[in-house]
Length: 67
Image (cartoon, rainbow, N blue to C red; front, side, top):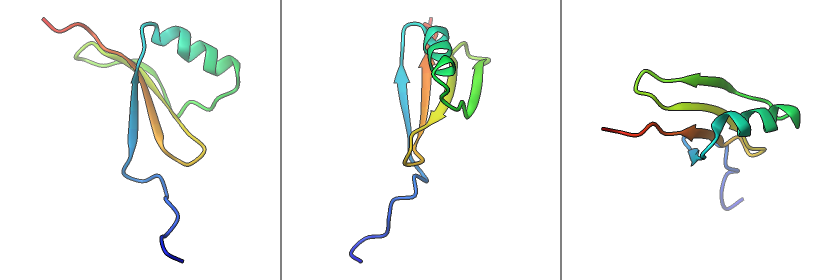
């Protein structure tokens, strides 16, 4: 074998959206497993995480405006 199969470790994809709550609810309705439940971070961002079939983490976020 030329290369070992990718295990998904060490990689995370972040996707910025306008309405993170809508995306969260849409994915929950479709039965997508949520790996990190939706939450607000102390610095203001709101996000949650899922995992693709290859094991890559996907963070879906609404960034807060910085002042």
